[in-house]
Image (cartoon, rainbow, N blue to C red; front, top):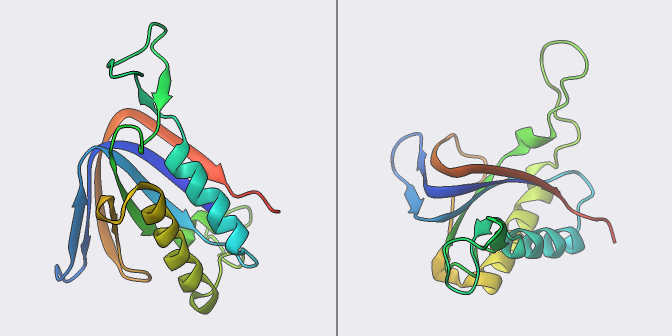
Length: 158
């Protein structure tokens, strides 16, 4: 399982026909790729890592610490999370000019893991703080990066 996290001031998703819209304020945008063979342990590890990753500045109520380090997680800042499924994170462009997606999990395998990931993030930071796109839909995703800070996190196999 692979996640691309972007620290954002604001992010939103709109479905192609404009029938669905979701947005967050300060927090993280998570682009989530699910690979064939991923399991519940990958979900747990990655969801916990994403919600505990210290990518926001400051500590103890101060805007930044004395060394200007990132010391706070999205949970610490009471931030929000927008989760978008993105099978293209497992695109392989090593041969030719068209990426192949054979490593990406098929919907029947990916959807339950995607939903489990969402539920784990909700458990970690509160259900009202988590917004999503729609699995498999054509989506317009907008973000205003805060930093910018972009981190790639891979699940660990247990």
